[in-house]
Image 1 (cartoon, rainbow, N blue to C red):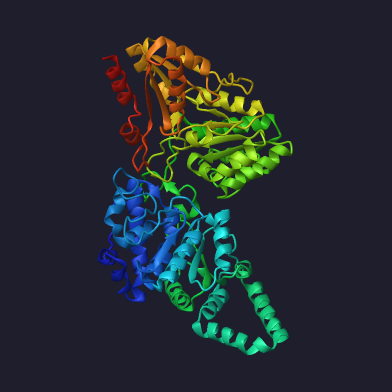
Image 2 (cartoon, rainbow, N blue to C red; image 1 turned 120 degrees about the vertical axis):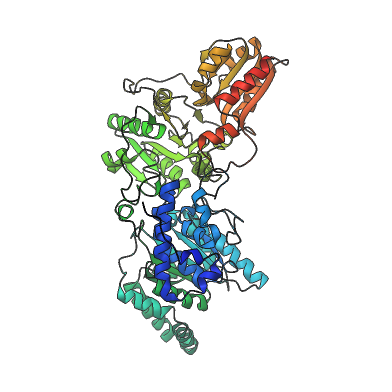
Length: 620
C-alpha cells in the first residue's frame, strides 16, 4: 500500500496555521485529513465513520472561530478524530486508544482546545451554555460553540440544555446540530442553502430587528408580521421547534460544502444570541464501504482500506453479548409478553437478531438511558415482561430510574448489564467498574455475576422467572462454554454460591469470569475457590462456613474495591472469625485509562498470574 501523502496537512501544527490558508485550499486539506484518518485508524483500530462525516465541519469551525480562545464543546467524543488531527495530534493519532497514548475521546486539558472531557452523549449544550454564561460574566467576548449529533439529540439532557438556554437572558451560544442520519433533513438543496445564507446575514438580522422596533407601537400589525415570518420559515425549514425554544434556526446546510460552511459560520459568528445551525453530513463520507455500512465502520478493528473489513471465520467462542442475544430470541419465541429495550446500543448489546425477528417487541429508546427504565416500568406495570440491555457505564445515567421506577415498585424488569468491568481502549468514561458498588445498596434487587456463558444463560432464566427486579452483569469478552443443550427451564437457586474447588487455609471468593479462570491455579495450590454468583442476596451461610474453616479469605471482583461487594464479604467473614486474614482484590480508587483489557487487568492485579502471586505470599 502506498504511503498517504498530506503536504497541506503537514503544514498545520495549530489552528493558527489553518487560518492562514485561503478558502480555496480547504477542499484539498479536507481530502488529506480524510485520507490520513482512514489510513491511521485502519492500522490502530478505533472510531471511523463518525469522524469521516465531520471533516469539513471540523475544519470550518477551526477556520472561522479563534480557537482555542473561542470554545468548541464536542458531544459524542468519537466524532472528534479530525479535531485531534487539526489541534496538534496528527502524529499521535497512531497511539489513540492505546495504553499511555492519545485518549479515545475528548479529554480535558489534553490540549488547550479541550476544555471539558466528553465520553458520553447529550451534554454539550448544557456545558456550552455554562461556558457562555461564564464568558459573559468575565466579559471575555469569546465565542462558544456546541457540536451535537450522532444520536445525542435523542437524549433528554440535550433538551434540558436547550430549554435553559432559551430562558437565559443576553447570552451568546451557537449550537451546531450535526445531522448524519437524515432524520430532519429533507429540505437540503439550493433553496434552503440560499435562505440560510440570507438568514445568517447581519443585514437580514438588522432588517428584522429594525422592523420589530418600527412595529412596536402597532401591536396587531407586529403580531401579524411575526406570524407570517414564522409561517413562511415553518413551511420551508424544519426549525420551528427550536425557534419556539428561543433559538434562531439556520439550515439545513450541506455539511460537506466547505466554502458555504465557512461563509455561513462567519455570518453566524457576527450575529450573537442563541443560534442553532443545522448541518447535514453523511457518516463514512469519502470512504465508500463506510458510507454503505456506517454501523459496521463506526468502531473498527485493524483492516486493509483497499479491501475493507472482512467477515471473521466462525469461532468456537461466543461473546457474552451475542450469547445474551441468542437467549433473548429463544425466550421471546416462548413468551409473547417479552419486550426488548436498549438505549441506542442494538448491535453492541447483541440485540440485532431480536430486532429483526421481533420488530414489534423491540424498542431502541435512543441515548436516553433513564427513559429506558421509566419506559420499562410502564411496560411491566401493564403486564409485559421487559428486558433492558444497557452498558454498565451508561447504567450510571439510569440510576434514578433503577431506584424509583424499578426497585421501589418491585417491578419484574430484567436489566442485563453489558460491558461490566474493564472494557479496555475506550478509556475512563467507558470502563464498567462502578455498577456493583452503586446497585448493591438498592433494596429489592437480585444481582448476579456469571462466570461463563452457561452461568449467564441460567442466570438470565433465573432473572426472568423470578418476576422481580433482577440484574445480570457480564463482561466484554468471549467464552467457549457450550450452551447449545441448555433450556429455558433451567435455573439456579437465588442467593446460593457454588464451590468450584475444595482446598485448605486459603479461600478465594470470586465474582464473575475470574472464578473459572482461577480454577487451574486453585487446584494446583490447594486453595478453596468459590464462584459467588450473587452480589445480592449474598450467600451468607457459605461465607460463615468458609470463614470458620480457613485462615485467609481473598475476594475478587471486577469492580471498584471502595464500596464494592468484597468489603461486605470480608466484614461478614470477620464477624464469624476475628483472627481471619482478609484481602479485597478489585479496581483501585482511580479512573482507568486506555489500554487493552489484558493490560489493564494486569495493572490492577486482577489477572491470574497476579492473583497466584498473592496466594503464594499468603502461604509463606
